[in-house]
Amino acid sequence: MKKRNKLKILNDPIYGFITIPNELIFDLIEHKYFQRLRRISQMGLSYLVYPGAHHTRFHHALGCMHLMQKAVRVLRFKGINISEEEEEALYVAILLHDIGHGPFSHAMEHSIVNEVNHESISLRLMEKINEEFNGSLTLSIQIFKGDYHRDFLHQLISGQLDMDRLDYLKRDSFYTGVAEGNVNSERLITMLTVVDDALVVEEKGIYSVENFLLARRLMYWQVYLHKTSIVAENLLIRVLQRAKELVEKGEELNASKALSFFLKNKITSENFTPAVLETFSKLDDYDIISAMKEWSNANDFVLRKLSSMIIDRDLLKIKVKNKPFLSNKKENHLKKIKEKYEISDEEARYFIFEGSISNQAYHLNKQNINVLYKSKKIVDIVKATDQFNLEALSKPVIKYFMCYPKYKH
Image (tube, rainbow, N blue to C red; front, side, top):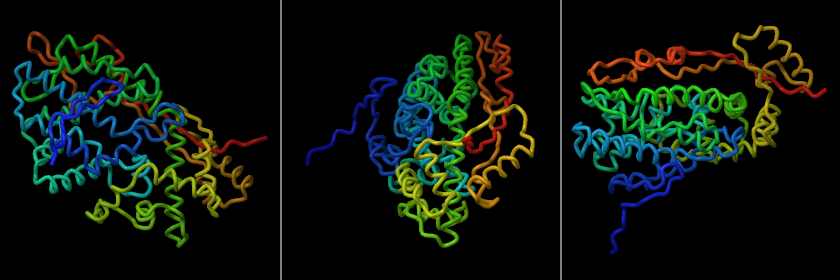
């Protein structure tokens, strides 16, 4: 029988050619859990704002692995000892770090799956794959969880300057066309080294780190926290909540088998069994989109209207302010919407809601980004930089929003 070539080269619009380093990585990419990421959008409903933002989590995971290959080469060149087992474990951990994301996962985590975040689902899926692969992911899982004795390996996967952030900022900037997010990930990786088992940036990389943190802040305000994206995501949360509410009352709603399961059952971390995990692994963006297309003809006014708003991109209006809204504002809108649609108070609340958004580009005292000077002194980036605004970037900025229908006069 002809042996299959597993050392493939993939073409990526960001980095050019990405190589699959070994057979284990190839087999993981081929696995159905990983292939599902082709059907999970990296940026949820952001394409309603930026038409190019249709890239997937599959795309992103491969980009992260490519950057990790660069990081390993750079660190080894600088004399940092990384064994072959540790190298392979890093590639596996970064490749699978997002495998637990559901369709529009932040909306799902607030509606039909309770108290179970995508990180814990990623871990469960990795442990399931580990059983199938006879324990060959054990070291990767240790590093992913931060249980391995060499801290810097975990920092490369989950830190304030990890391969995940270096890829998604560059990739999301490319696909949205928002140039402010374009970070020089290759230079940042070239500036990395390890001191006392912790990742540090060489002094000459200070300006690249400044640019990275500023890009992160701008991408949050311009893209991830764009007001239209906030409306769309909040509408989707309410679509799923309303669908779940109706199903609990005994209504039959058209939806895929996997989505129906989550609408009919209350899923928490306690009852997230292997069977539930398997059902979760069947969910992707197409389940949600096709359900909303069906529900835009539903008998229930609220579900019909909310679904149509997303499908037809006829969204609610949104106001964003630096201070919380006065309570009478919401009450006035509620009164108007009840009269306009002739619906109950409870139903009207699906169309008028408020919340807050927070942007913090850098977290002090949480796996800090430290700078290594030629004198061997190590200083936090906020103290090392002459940019006053970096200290400001480490303070959370909170804004308040209110969404309500457009009233045609």
